[in-house]
Length: 608
Image (cartoon, rainbow, N blue to C red; front, side):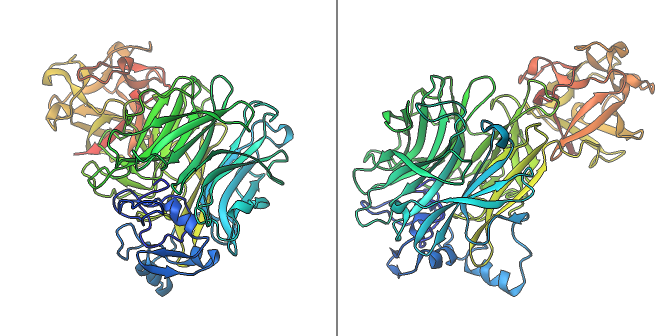
């Protein structure tokens, strides 16, 4: 939820933790300067507020930053929820089990976590640097932690103490970035830390202030501000990238335009000091929409990928996650285009506070995955999914098509919509793409605290979860279509294709186990087995139905690659069941092909 975030805290403007407020429509307190929709006043506001006395909804809170940080957050709806007083009482009474899983980062409040793995710092390469917002009295602090053991443990090694975030002036929405190349006099490997500062200063002229470190986070010096408000409206959630022309780009959420409740903006600098070219990247034609919380990553193919939320008044898609792309990291196209909503084949999607990361291919090949996490996972109908707070979505197609589910390393049970639980959780994949470090926040009954853990990205790699004798339909992760016998053929040689899922017999397959994760699949209508034509070992060989004969061409080894997702490998050839050409059309042919980890070879098994 972005800065004027709208979702999080109705009455808690003092919770500075994130700069955002709650989702635009369900929560939030009006920001100074002009009345704001009771939508999500960015939790960031809340964060910032944490640092100073605040008057919200007519209630006066003269708390110190520390007290504010310890105060119970107000739920997005304004009523007590699991994240508010009721949850706190339950925790203290022992009625709620340990909240988020993982290891706590630091000893107290920690908001808006960020993490980078050093790649341009010589002998320090491979270390992980993490930052969180915390407080020392009324002073907002950027606490810098380091791990030298791939995220197993962290030690605080430095801090950013910006005077503009001291004395209750406000601190929110920080970011952390390692320069991949020289920018002006800033060498590759320079660490940049930036924040939203000044929300609670007497004149409330917010700015996005940037600090630099050339000793891997031990000491920091002020560099510049990429944006400064001329009035009392908010500037939130700075994010860095380096464009194709070498410019350092600062992306942020902007509330200063009277024509927009909030929009996304970018500026650039060729020396890290002087900023130019301010322009909108996402600015809805509907003035009440609130795009916010941008995160940008450059993909190996050169494309720049930006995730963000769009909070809009009311409805199922309040604060839903979107993305758009840029060829050069600076030009993002028509800003009124709101982008694409990522979702799974069965329609699940994230709401609020997204972050993204790129994970390399685990086999060292050219194909990797985009990883996406958000605060809450919703079902197609807008209800909260069972695995909300414990899910990463992955995509192997550079963001296009459907996404599929993975278990996240940190489990934040049933995150409520407010500034703390599972809010803007960074993901940091390992260099080999096999694991991912996650830092997620949760309310522990006293403060909002960060938890970290590392988990696998490859699933269980076995056939666990598949029942011998069970009947399943197989849904392709890329297309969302079902494995189907063409035209309901009852003849040997009937072709196998993908087709719109319809619940009919040609899309139902009985699984018979033969040990070591190997199964034969028999068509429920035809009684024939799924077969590699003529037992071919050639990539691209057709897959059909044929008399069940016990041949290796009819044996398929299942390997779990995600939550309910599998790849099927022909025992005869070692190649994967694949939709030819990555087709997303009904009727796309099914074949065997060299296993490559891409979604046309990933199938969701749904028992019927």
